[in-house]
Length: 430
Ligand SMILES: Cc1cc2nc3c(=O)[nH]c(=O)nc-3n(C[C@H](O)[C@H](O)[C@H](O)COP(=O)(O)OP(=O)(O)OC[C@H]3O[C@@H](n4cnc5c(N)ncnc54)[C@H](O)[C@@H]3O)c2cc1C
Image (cartoon, rainbow, N blue to C red; front, side, top):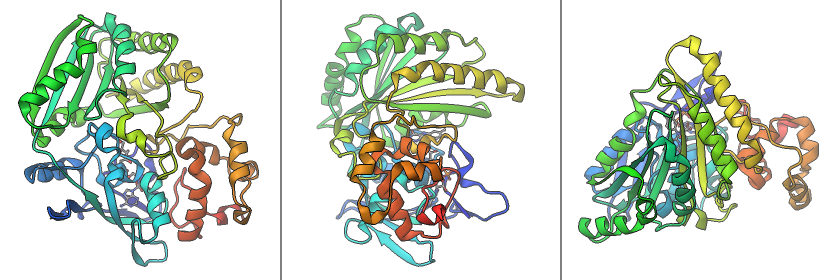
């Protein structure tokens, strides 16, 4: 059986042949907005667009992702990267309670007091691994407007802009989260971002001008726009690509822990410049992280990559099936060329990749073996021989993997919830 939220998984993890798909689509409502406690209970089948609209009408925000057709469940259970991240963290960082149906059929809750180990695991490794989530309760924040900026630059200036942006964006005021986008050489470089509100729209505009000064001072932008939008409008603005996409999609990604060296930037620009005019949707998107997202420790939830400063996504999109070979080959070559610059090989589970491999030279393998408690009977190298997919899981969960396997064994000993890259229970090794 597989659970399905918004069906936006990059791999068919919410689909199954000859099995049952538990589609949560009809359960898509906000159950309650509690203004006094500043919380909102939302059913797990909700999509982001309608939920943002409704929350926006109440003047409150949860830090969501940018795609309005994305499912709330998958996004939240794997993390949730969006334009409020540097102030409020990942979507899952706002969770206060999760209602679940466990593998034995019982209904339960996970929060800081009840099943706190499960709550830890569901925040970052929850998609399809431990339980069916039926409802989320989030902390909400009053937010009436946001201020958006968008700057365009010539493709030829891609390197100059990225050199500045990459050391500015993860370290600027936490209320500002931004993204750097590069497409083919016929399109501008776009830097866009969202500032969360302060005292007034006027003061926010002033502050934003001050914050983006390093980019403005380059003196090479071809356009700059700043607007105040409602949350609803902002979701439409950033999610505008969600509907009008080509049919097919291939994607790889990396968390990055230090500024990119010039050589890596050259590789990015070179591969984007290889695209022809018709490949206008192909994109490298770099999201700024840092800020309050990084204030959580790497083991405070199952999501381990808190020290990353960027999340990079390399995406190829095409419309006609015969374009697949060329589109995938371009992305694979590009991704291969960048490998030396991402030694951690750290991946985001919400960009699930069934090809992902973890380097056996990883130093943490040794560390993990030493810190594993004897009672768990876990020896990482021995486990690796039994189950090669642990290599991939290490890329998503880092040093949190062993704890996740223990929790899986506690809540789902018979491995009822499983997919190609699911967290195994011990029974898998029998
Ligand atoms: C166009 C697009 C834009 C995106 N933009 C962003 C973004 O801005 N930020 C970001 O962080 N990510 C983004 N993503 C990635 C996205 O968050 C993940 O793919 C996410 O897993 C999708 O969730 P879903 O519910 O739509 O998918 P589904 O395919 O329905 O589910 C994904 C996984 O979660 C499991 N799952 C679903 N519902 C439940 C449940 N109720 N209980 C337990 N497990 C469940 C499924 O079994 C599956 O393993 C984007 C993806 C796409 C395709």
